[in-house]
Length: 401
Image (tube, rainbow, N blue to C red; front, side):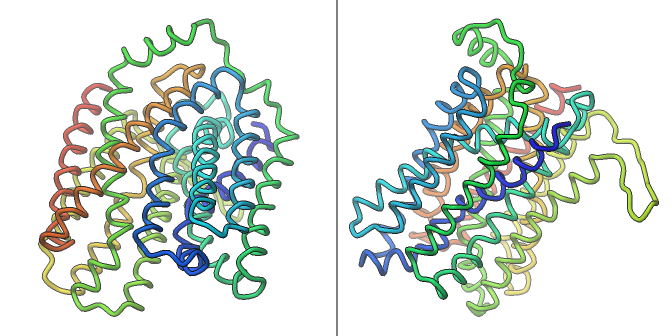
């Protein structure tokens, strides 16, 4: 296993996670700087989401054709450029351009980093058996970056101001680029003989690809909905804004912690201070885990809809973090385990493209229904999405037997 690749992957995942949380972290000072309201800030967030849909699949083709290093380097250059533009914005149009560049760069990074996580965290001879471990560990590091970002940007803005804070964060993109110079990228190039058209035919003829993509379409909006409306759900039940914000942090900690716990559980061994413990991970654990978590997701979202007390709602939000955390990385691990290595970039692109549609459409449906009722009652749509996820997970489990 290439140690430079592992170090580069850790740094790149952390910075990419930070960039994912950037807009949410700077929306208040950005709105004040541009003198715009929440509606226009929401428009910028939507631009980021919509950019993902076409660009992540384009990045997938580039990963499989021109190579991982070039796509990774281009992604970080665009990421740093977007932060430079954001640091000096004076108009909404400039902010729109910056977010467009940010979304394009992030799409490239999220594609290539999902492809490089398995070889970065697991020796080649242990793949695909430990694919789910690699993806859960990678997404734990990504989540840590997203968790740190709001804290870091608040401290930096307080001490050095808006422009200098964003420029400082932009320089972090140089770290994975420098570490990447030590990576043996040639060793990561898979043997391939199929054309672009043949590769697509292979992917689209694979039922596992369709089931995983459809499952992600149903899962990611539930995750996004809980993250977006968690504080609203709690304050509607009489929880103070301060306590709700604190519990949102607990949600994210439980979300990340569950990924780490699952990663270690799927590793099959643990060592500490000279003592070691090993256990056998049965075949089919990955699909069984997704199915179990999907079923629990139905119960938790239904619990949110039915909750009558403040404490009950708080418990549901924290439980949602524990349950939702491992679903995505385990799902994409199943996808990559059942697709040839030469097609991984395109597989990830299709996966995120279809998921991005659900990410955009279903939360919009929840928001529209919430305007006519309440956010709590609107979460019945999330329950429906979780139910479909459970059905698809059942189908996936049977398909893999």
